[in-house]
Image (cartoon, rainbow, N blue to C red; front, top):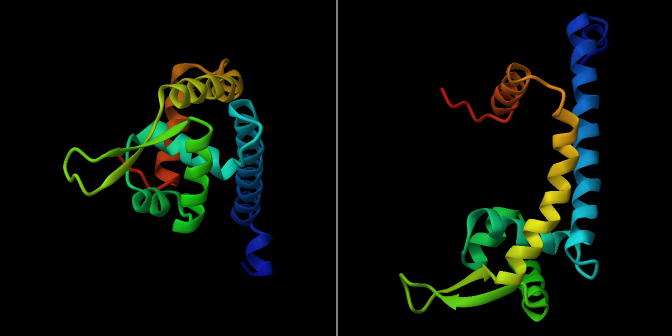
Length: 152
């Protein structure tokens, strides 16, 4: 962005938006670190990212998990091994291909994830508690559009 653009109202608004997005990303990261600690203080946030993905999307292969979480395969393997040793993740045969192995959360992993996410979600819900339904719907639609998820 050139200096001339920064002097326009639009440019100033874009800078403010950038600041708010940065604040949201920072707050979200801090909350993820806190949620990881609530889940299990001995694991890294990257391991909880894997747990969170499995909780949301269900059993999958290590390669899909690596691609979906933007982690390299060796990191995913190391983190999965740690999560298995702690009893949060298990390997099972794929019902569609007996040669394939799927990673899935154990009952303990699902319950601990649910408990940790309740605390995390409460913080965001508390921030929108005073919004009416129209404000919330507008915010959701704007975020969907900003994220490129137009449901039109």
